[in-house]
Length: 574
Image (cartoon, rainbow, N blue to C red; front, top):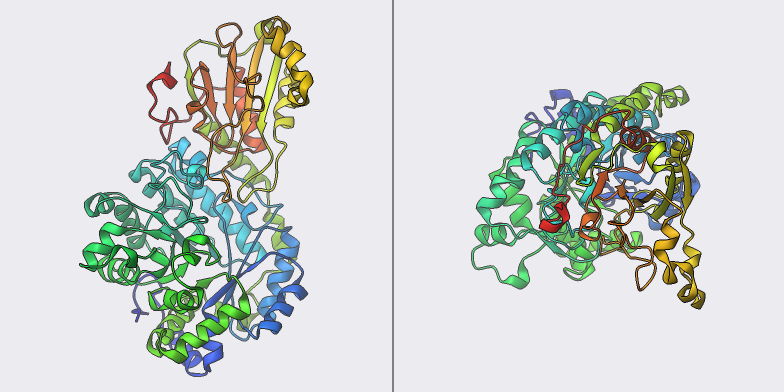
């Protein structure tokens, strides 16, 4: 049982009385309902409420996907009004207010923040996420990400991390948390026990943190301990195994019995709670991920996740079925009443820490519509511009190409790679803003037409018969890549459009060639021959504006490499 008077909740006597009296007034169904935090994929409140009625569930909280801010606020207001016990309302506020409100500020990915090497930028990210999340009714952020981007093959960590340096990860994450908490929201540090070592994705497979105990202690352990000591309220327990620590804490355990953290009492109770002294709330990562569902039978996994030390069960595969699995677990003893009461107490203590019980009595759980004016406000946009200016990184320019000038590089052939949105980002089309900025500065930009590389006619085209002759029409070949990682995509490589590589930068010694990436810092593994390479880390208007300013020499490059953009390849540095 948590020490409710101690950090991070520091509850008063009155708060504790509310927790205890509320728990005492609950029947079994209400207690089990509190364990569930459900995802909202439709902003229509009637859709959400109807699903709850059909399943007979009164959940403890919700996490919403991004929708227009006014819709989210209206939905959250209705949900809070309908709930007898105030709700936890969460969002993935990893890179700004756009994690909950489509019209919120897209400040920048965590890797962009890391590239500034300026903790003020991380603090501002927390402020923006907190202010804008609070404006629509959020009280809980599933952020910051504490993963370390050790493996450039990992399709998820990538720009969602603060890089590959553990000390920088902790510095930035701590400042994000300070800004968010000042705004009235709580953090959920993730993805315990740490992603970024494995090259696989826990959405699709139970992944593994393979570090030895002493190496984990010096890296992920150092970061988590630092965040716990600084007052992190909640931890998100992921579908990631840590075999070294599991074996240390449970000598003799068979390999087949080693579980991901979401199902591991060794990692959640013995390591996180007992050894590291965490006194807050633990929530699973999304339980619909294959990393959990493939670990054991669903009927067993649902109650086992709470028995393993998690307090909240995030999302479901089938709401009614998972709810019944949890109830059955209590009835059979797979989930003891003692552990159930402990988990619900922890949930109520977290709600009391957020003052949800007093705010419900005051009618202030969700602000009025005037609060929405802070979404994408001028101050937040100005901060985003400054962050982009400090982050854009010149990785290499061994051909001394930059700065670009109209006199030398007026005619540009532009290849656009990707730019169709990706994980937690349904946008795309940022290349049009890039082209617009170049044209405004006097350049002539021809966007390569990929339809030329389809059908049999391509074999007779000038692209194949006289590519060098065609290139004489241009002064510069420029690649603009917006290739986002995604949870259904197991590689982060460039897939070229044509078998013989008509769109590949083959003629880097015949025409100046420049490669710009705004979403993935690791493309040099596929284009090591390119002599000038720039990383922007986030596909936003702010980054595009900063990119053009720096490419034209109007502003110096200020960003540092928060990871190894050369992917350990010596030839990529040439």
